[in-house]
Image 1 (cartoon, rainbow, N blue to C red):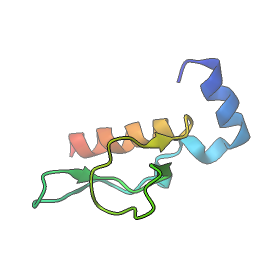
Image 2 (image 1 turned 45 degrees about the vertical axis):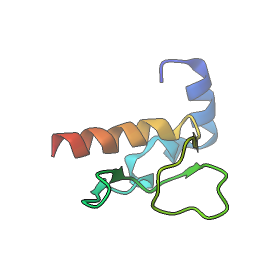
Image 3 (image 1 turned 60 degrees about the vertical axis):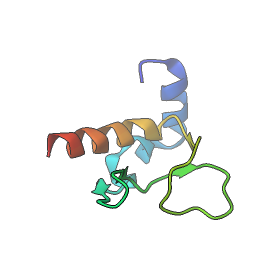
Length: 75
């Protein structure tokens, strides 16, 4: 977030860094994962609640995800 590319991308969408674009973390007892729904893509034609080997998050949205993860870990 200290890099110029972050601020250039954030200028195009000022609300992108807000944590509100991500859901609060949801722990799943069956598989032991914590899930966050938000603005990411992984190219799978059938997205759902399963691990993905790779996914894409627009740079400005990383801040919001970090906020949600920190809130989950603090709770």
